[in-house]
Image (cartoon, rainbow, N blue to C red; front, side, top):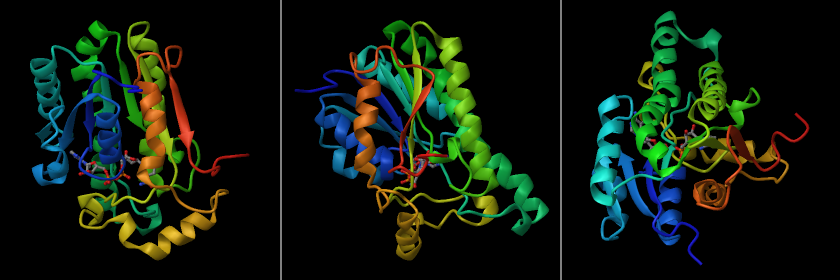
Length: 259
Ligand SMILES: NC(=O)c1ccc[n+]([C@@H]2O[C@H](COP(=O)([O-])OP(=O)(O)OC[C@H]3O[C@@H](n4cnc5c(N)ncnc54)[C@H](O)[C@@H]3O)[C@@H](O)[C@H]2O)c1
């Protein structure tokens, strides 16, 4: 049975990691999917699929979010689900190890992608979601709930995102549900920010660090991106989560158990 038959969905950060796993799963579940990506070649494997299209751009620009929504409406006549998933990390950079300039610029850059871009995706998609009685889904993190998932910049951004989910759930009710998924450590190439000189880094290049992260997780390992996709399907489906809003569902292998 297709859980998302004909659901009209936008996914930001669709070119790798969790976003790409969502695209693949949603297409298999019968959805129409528009991916927002930084480079077209990131989605080469989907371009033959009739139900897939993409927009190339930077989610830090309002226009990227707006073009994605306009394109989806032109193609499908409306939008049911916006998944604001694109995000960047800070590779555990400690405040006391930052220069003043790194702090000044790093804070703006991480908040821009992890928080401001989500607000822009929400703003650009709200009229269409309100009309369809749809859903906004964000990708949070275990760092929405506890320190230790990054440095202070990343933690600040994900705690702020948690506030955004709660506030928008109030403001968009009753027509639009607003929720999130909070992955724990996941095997993806997530990169960092220019201000910290981390743009070219990928978390999953450092296999030793991933191994050691896994040792702190009750289930004994980090997750694959695919393992989170059931939750996105549930939150995006017409009948799966009709009474869920303002909530971020945790998928962290037990990391936050007892916290
Ligand atoms: N990997 C983890 O351990 C982990 C844990 C918790 C939460 N998350 C969250 O999951 C989400 C997805 O990250 P991921 O781990 O799949 O990493 P990823 O790097 O594979 O995916 C993020 C995607 O966002 C895109 N992106 C980043 N900045 C962008 C911008 N300004 N404009 C357009 N696209 C942009 C990247 O190109 C990339 O394709 C993020 O919000 C991240 O905070 C990841």
